[in-house]
Length: 572
Image (cartoon, one colour):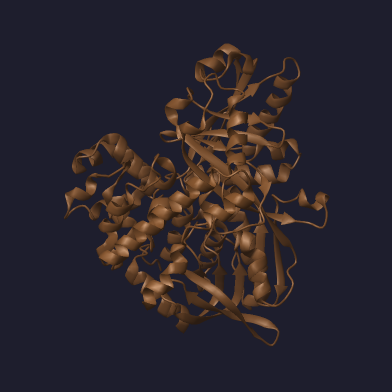
């Protein structure tokens, strides 16, 4: 029986009560895409499931990726055929069945720099890439002459290529996709809650039987009991493992990936780019009215919650992309910057560390399963493996995973609504492009969103300072999408924090005022949320001028953390 996918303040209060009063089959720790997928996998197998997240859903790696669903050409070159085939299958499932409203095809140009050998070498790889995908969810690759490539990407220097190959992968707003997986799990009955930090494990007879959790916004605590706890905390895997008092089966290393955003008109192109670097590859990815350029790949041993991009990171990206651009980019062209941490499996030697993009599942204690590694694209496979590994603790017949047949919330009816987009736009007095954009963000859940504007048509006005978004989207984030703080709305429910030059500072107060009555904020709380957000933006900007990780991290940490302030606000 399905429940509502709504995650508002009342549902949040109800979830807290249920967490403390019920024994679950499965408790998932971590609200990134792996944890979200694990909760959905478990609940759709008929297991009584709960999920807790210490910060916000997708607040870590799952909102700071390259935003691609892809097989990974470099893994193909490393002859990791199994990983590529698995990822391509997942990409096609997302495009066609699971999330067609959120995941879209995206074209890339691979510039060729060497005559004779490079075209057959790369072309044969892309031929295999297309063959491994099996389906026809994206067009096949196509060879281009230099003239043909420059027609598609006039922004390239003429001496930067001798020809090119165009191929397709897929992209999605990672934070929105993760949130939608969470909401789908809630629709099937999972109890999900953010701002709920695990502080202690409960052990009885040498096995894990539950956890103690603290609400980081109120300071309240509760105990959650479960037959099995699944640790899906990414770069925090080792920290959670230490809470058990035992040793894990693997260690996780954090690798920092930095991306920058520039306005779409700064690079003249009709497709994205994939460029070889001395370390890996560099993507230039179309993203609405912007290009995302990334990524870096460097070890990170500092603050896990707020990784900082340094001047060196940004200079690296600019220098490499400028090698092929006719009109070089400068720091002044950058409108947004974000840094994320990849959870890579760290082996005993460099040889085992090379397996870092594979995922690993372990059962270090009875009642505890840990999963780490992997890549965003294969989250659903990782989730299946994690729940399968919990079989010894569940003491019951475990049905097989069914998530490959479970569309995410908003997918059902999406294509029909797209066919009706003109009529929908006319009904609500919106431009067709804006209604299409809403459908591509919410799918058939757009009805819930637009219902909020029935009584107040002013909610259909653009947000001040962030005209791509409507006021109703901020309101919906608070009433339906589990947003608890202003930062949740500006950084993850929308992507205003990286998509406008002011990074949300001009939009912060209007949004806080707009959601205040939904979230129960008074004037002092509105002021506090705005000040904390503005301090975050100022600290991030300053950190990006620092020469290295250490100084950038120190600068970023000068900003207050809204979830660490929350308890003080609640008790004050």
